[in-house]
Amino acid sequence: MRRNAVLFVAVSLLSGLGGSAMALVCGIWILDLTGSTGLAALAGLCVYAPTLAGPWLGGLLDRVPRRPLVIGVNLALAAALLSLLAVRGPGEAWLIYAVSLAYGIGYVLVDAGETALLPAALPPARLADVNGWRSSAQEGVKLVAPLAGAGLYAWRGGHVVAVLAAVVPVIVAALYGALRLTRTVPAPPAARPAGVRDGLATLLARRTVRVPVALAAVSIAMSGFTTAALYDVVVTGLELPSTFLGVLAGAQGAGSLLAGLVVGRLVRRHGEIAVGAAGTVLFAAGCLGRCLPWWPGTVAASVVIGVGLPWTLVAAVTAVQTYTPQAMLGRVAGTANTAMFGPITLAIPLGSAAVAAGGRPPLVLAAVACLAAAVAAVRGGGREGVITASEAEARARA
Image (tube, rainbow, N blue to C red; front, side, top):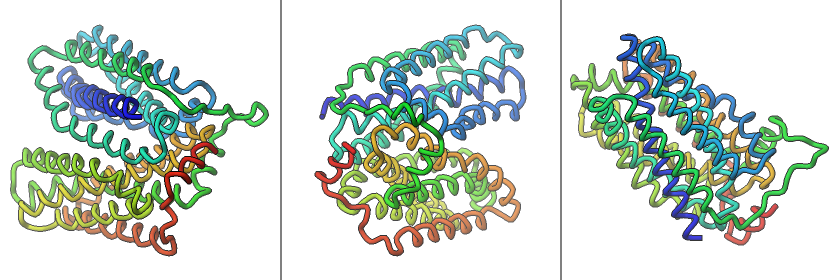
């Protein structure tokens, strides 16, 4: 339904606006309060840490009505943001950490909730398209939201940013309430309560699900692994100012915008595994391109990476939505999120240590890992991931 598609894209746009702005502002706010860059960085850890609890948090979505839970999470997040009005000095910095943690928990629940709600609101043949549009909306917002949030913080302070950010989840909750769900979700049998092992087993049971999720996990982990390497390449290798990283971020965002507009058509035509593998190969090519001693090549490589990463993520999410039974979607979506985003918490410090050998070796290592994953994915798989719209419809009802 077109109406539901527009609502989901609007949700992604607004959520990305508030989340991206606050993610940066929380770190800046703590830095201003404490003067410690280490303490400021911990705010980001609070946001990402709950990803590791994805299987357990996702299980909640299979035990209770999904839409009311997602609406409730957004309203609770709005209340948490308003608590930042009490921050007056270093003694209240813990409130910022608490809100960052709430953001992290809310992200896991809402992301898994959206993954579970989409098949109940849209025809299976439209899932890949809408997932791609949502990705474009989120990436587009990332180009402006952090700068806007930082500018507003510098102008009026953190309290104003918190109040405006609190308005966003309230609007998002209203948009969720306006969805027209056309499919019901059967409750799990009372004699067999939802469990983490069930979600993991379902995720691993089908090749058309586990392979795209694995490809996304490798690509996302390698993006974290190469973060420090990119800094070294720009500052040491190319001898450019650190502000050039903003140019590369913009180039990657532009690639992601374009990627989201075409990925749905590619998934329908070639299947989730093929698109996920193609995205992984593009990411590997981008890593090698960033090794070039020529800044225009580094910019072009960032565009290529901006295309590749969303392709892997959209392919994985669409596979989970298409091939998972409705009653299991919460657990499987939460488990998939942990599999895809959890490894980055280890990959970032490993990449920081690996940069001791220089910026280019970690980039080459990441490219090799991604190419190996893509080759392993396509060997013997054929076109297993391609299904017709009618087949997808039947599986969605399963």
